[in-house]
Image 1 (cartoon, rainbow, N blue to C red):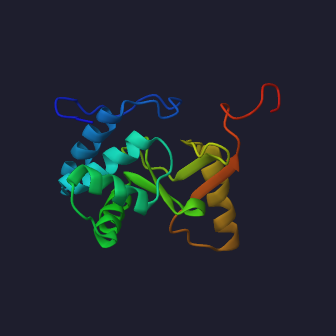
Image 2 (image 1 turned 135 degrees about the vertical axis):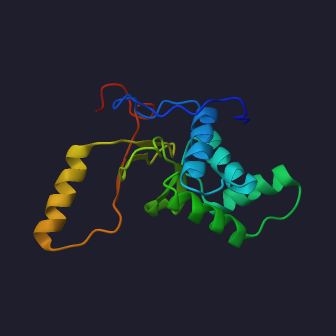
Image 3 (image 1 turned 90 degrees about the horizontal axis):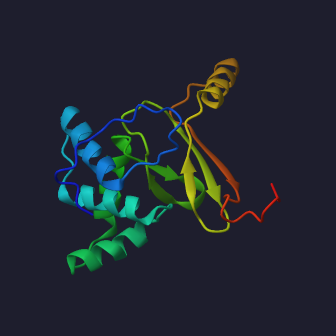
Length: 168
């Protein structure tokens, strides 16, 4: 995947459901990192590209295998975990806790927390922005006196491709 020549375009459609070209999202990631005074190194960029190419939550060791094929040399776990930590810190990637896997954020230019629908049959994931859910979580946390550091909501089920017709 090559994003050179692709202009980064922040999404202005609140209901797009993350339907963007991977090259466009990687170009946006490069621009966001630069604007934040950070650098999307070649390795970090390759990890992000792999996550976009895979299109589903991917574990660190699957990323290691893919990068070893790409680079034709060993890649150690600490290298991948450092790259993933950076991508998470820049809100370019989210960790799917229940699968110990990672997905690219559809809208890293927006300040929102992850709400993910995960298919337990095919492994697909869909990121959703729903301010109503996030508002309820914030209200409940405040009522309980919690200071929330991070929110990741994961909903497990079957995606439209895996649900038998009429079974919803």
